[in-house]
Length: 49
Image (tube, rainbow, N blue to C red; front, top):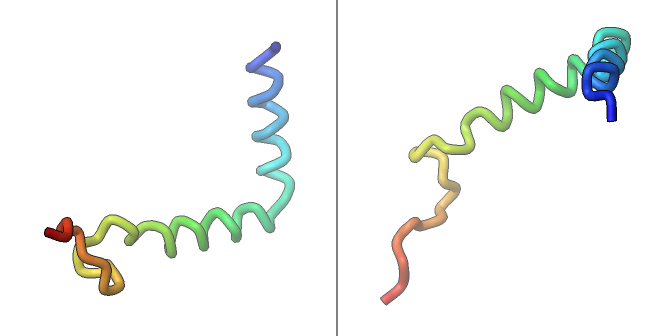
């Protein structure tokens, strides 16, 4: 399997399709706060007794 060719093709698709840019940006913005301790949405990290 030619990984260099596969990577070049993926880069070309990403560069050409602007919708992927928007999707990636939105994913980065919304998924970036997943590990923040203040945004746990009421879930407790403590184990029940």
